[in-house]
Length: 205
Image 1 (spheres, rainbow, N blue to C red):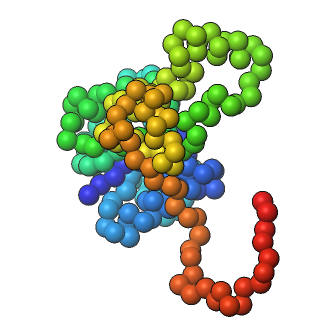
Image 2 (image 1 turned 45 degrees about the horizontal axis):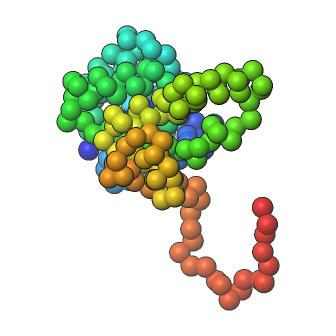
């Protein structure tokens, strides 16, 4: 089986999404699932072969989308995982893939609270603009793009079961299409934990 991750950066030190992708890719490779990466910035760790990386542009650029699709065909990719990349090019890419290569399964992943845009603090000018968009379309722009992606993928993954109803309502998708998978741990759990030696103390973060 071959999996293609679509992301912005490759370095796991760049942020949470990149770290999760790196952990998943290593996990899959240990189970003989070959992993490839489509990214905008090739800040790749040394363990990723250049032959497993393809660059793309985050804009509605048909040539860039065609380049990624050709790469998918060339590498015989089975599953495409969009790591919450939201722009017009991704909607375009997913729609073409579904039309030209319906055998390929596409998974969309939401790495944050689906109502995040509602809580984000914007300047007054941006707030007014967002309010007008909301009144007209009942979506903020990133939410509208995520809705388009969610409607066109085979499975949509959120971080918590509590988000399932929210994305179904916001994006207009069926509950059957959504799965909740929390982020993997970024550290190893020791096989033996000496609980008897544990002190009676706790940490508040």
